[in-house]
Image (cartoon, rainbow, N blue to C red; front, side, top):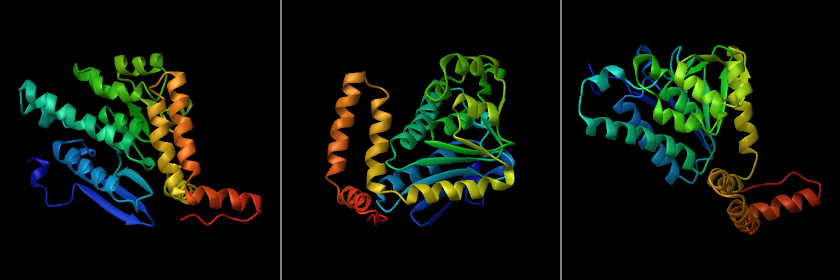
Length: 262
């Protein structure tokens, strides 16, 4: 059975207070990034990009696992090179859409994030995870080097640590992932939702326009030479200064009061 035949929603969506919550909802298959799951994620990311009322996005997985990567059974149903190229192009587009989305994207990770699931975590701006979470790029265990996950992974952790994970397929625990820079916060399992809400509270208290300026600049400048990066950052900061929110924030600071952002 393909997930096209499922009678439930493979991706659940909730929006409250400007935050979009997306939950991959195929727990019996560890929320695999099947063709249907990838299409569903891409559709929601596209919608979030166009919706200016969206201030943050959270990606979670139902059940015990966050995401175990691609659906290998589905992949083996075709032996065509063009099929594989299109599948990995689609997955890469989802990951790039997360990075280019103008609002922060938080991964909520309660369990295993493997292969493309680990890539998904690495692609998010923040990752808040439980102590039970584990991470691997394990394609090498079935003879497949995780080349596309390597792109996101090597931009989150050092090249030697990334290559070690890619060559061995070994899992690392949550604390190691935090030490290496793959995730941003580790909490007890029962505190995971509370930690997510606290982080959202912090983000939503800031100017959403300033964060939109900042996220696009942050990712763009990482790929630039130093001089170009400063040129871009200076231009973005100057334009940010022209926003009413910025004027309000600076005036509030000078007047020793709490700013009221639009």
